[in-house]
Length: 225
Length: 404
Image (cartoon, rainbow over all chains, first blue to last red; front, side, top):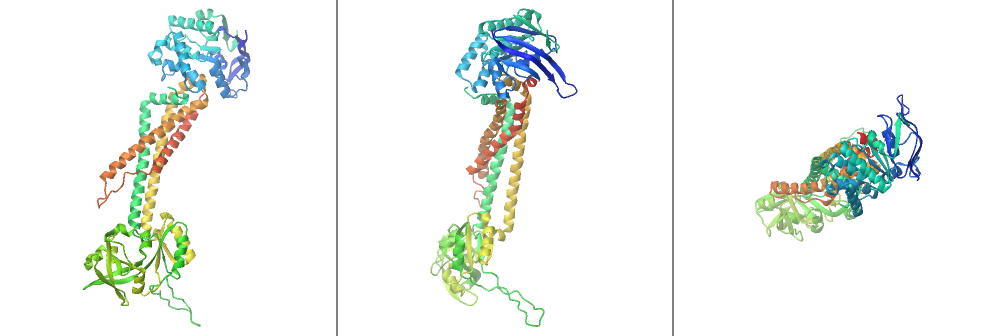
C-alpha cells in the first residue's frame, strides 16, 4: 500500500513575528496509507483540528513537507491547492455545514458542480445514488433545516463522497449526535471505507469509537505520541 | 437546473434573501426610472423651449460692421469731440462671396440672405410701421419653417406678392388676395398683394414683419443688389457661438449667434442641464451605496457558507463571481424594471400635463439611447458596488470562515 498522506516534520505557528507567537504543532511525522481507517484523538487544544486543516489543505504549515497522493504541496498556488482539495479530499464537519439554501440533493451535487463549473445529469444521478447509500434518497428534495441532526450528517457524508475522494477527513462527525445516531454514522463511515477503499481520518473524542478504528493516532501538545 | 455554479448560487442567495432582493431592486428600479424620466422630461422641455424660441429666428446672423467716425486730429490740436455715427442701412460688401464662405463652413446647414429695413404699410386711412424683409423663399424656409406658422395662404413672395403677420392683417383689415401699399422713409412705395398670413406666436412680430421678394425690398429700400444680413442655421445649436466667432474672424463682419442674443435662455438651459446632472449623480451614488451595503451584509451573513464552498474546492474567483453576479443582477433587472416604470410615468404625465394652448407638454417617447445609457450605467454601478464585497468574500480564509 502507498501513502495517501505524508507529513514530514510539520510545524505550525500562529502569530509569527509577533510577541505572542505560539507553536501549535511541533514536528509532526505521519503517514496515512490508502484505504486506512484511522482515528485522531487527543485532548482539547492539542492541535487535532489544526493538523486536520493542514492535511485538508485549508491551512498551510509553517514548515515541513506535506504530500497528498504523492504530490508535494509546497509551492502550490492557491488555485492548484483548491482543485486538489476539491478532487482528492472529502470533508465532514462536526456541525455538518450544509448549505441551508440548497436541497439535500443540491448539497451533495455541489462539489461536482464546483469541479465542473455547472450541474450535469450525471452529477445528479451520482448524488442520488450517494443519498441512497446513506439511506436518504427520499429526502433528496428536502432542505437541511427539515432534516434531523443524524440525517444532516449523513447528507454531509454523501456530499464528502461526491467526487469519490481518496481521502475523507472527518472532524468529530459524531460529536453533535446522540449515541444511537453516532453509532449509525460511524458504521456508515466504516462501510464506505470498506467498499470504496477511501482512507478515513476521523477526529473523535469518543474512546469507544476510537477503539473500533484500525489505527489510533494520538496527539498531545502538538506532538504525536 | 443546468446553471453554471456562480449563477446557481447567486440566484439561490437572491431567493433566500427575498426581502433584501426586493427592496434593493425597488431602489435600483426607482433610481433608473428617475434618471430616464428626468432626462427625457428635461430633454423634451429644452427641445420645446429651443424650438419655440429659436424656431422663428436664425442661429447666426451676419451683419455689416458698424460704421465709425475716423478721428483724424487737425494739425496743432490736441483733442476732438467724436460723436457716435448714425447707422444708415448698408449692404454687406460682396455678400455673395460671404454667403458662399458661410455655406462651406463646417456645421452650417442653411444660408439665407435677407434685406431688412423700416417702412410703413398702409391701406385706406390705416397705416402701421413695419419691418420689411426681402427674402429668397426657399432659402429662408430652411432657416425658419414659415409654412408651419401660416394661418392662411402660402409663403409666396414672388413678384408683387408678400406675406404679412396676423396682427397686421387685422389692423389693416386685409385677407389673402387683398392689396396693401408699402412705403419707405424716402417716399418710395409699391403695392403688395397678400399671398399668405402667418402667426409665429409673438404679437409684436406678427404686427411688424412683412415678407417680400429680395428684389422688391431692394427697390423699396434703394439698395440695389444689396443684402443687409445673412442668416445661418447650424446643426449643433450649442456650437453656434464658436462658428460665429470663426466667421467673424474670417469676414470682419458683425456676427451674432443666438447664444449672444438669447443669453438668458442659454443660462436657463445650462442650469437645467446642471441640475439634471446633479440629480443623476446623487441617484447613482445612492443606488451604489444601497447595492454595496446589501452585499456587504450578505457576505457577512454567508461567511460560513463561503468557507464551506471554499473547502469543497470553490476558488476565490468563483466565490467572487457569485457576488459580482448579484450586483450585476440588481443593476440589470433594476434597469429593465426602471425603464418600464419610466415609460409608465411618461405616459401618465404626457396625458395629465398640457401646455397653455392644449398641446402636449411632453410626449411619451423615450430615446432608446437614453434607456441604453441608463441600463449600462445601472449595470456598471451594480458591478462596481459589488466589487468590494465580492473581493472581501473571495479573500475570506476558509478555516476562519467556517469557525465563525
